[in-house]
Image (cartoon, rainbow, N blue to C red; front, side):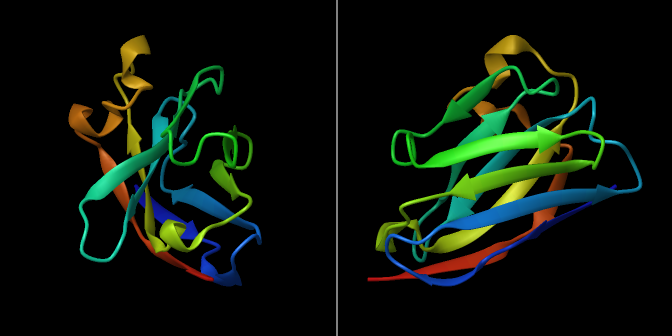
Length: 128
């Protein structure tokens, strides 16, 4: 399975971007998906996560109310809609997939569960 994150770019503060995480080689239907980001000089952090059904989501406090994670299993794609972008949102964004889902996974601890697949990142640069 290959995951590919796309949709990054350079934007002004206050703008919006939509990132996509697509998969080839396998359906993502049974995988929980998380979006992570690594800002310059910082560790990689979980940003948002979504259950395989799409019924449960998690957002980091720093993006709550501005970001929306969603999925279209028919298109084998998970999205991250990012609105009201700030300079501090500048980072490389990664998507990751994990099967063997349990309800408590969709939380701030999502990354600690060990991802089955990681995508290459996409750079988001927000200029103030």
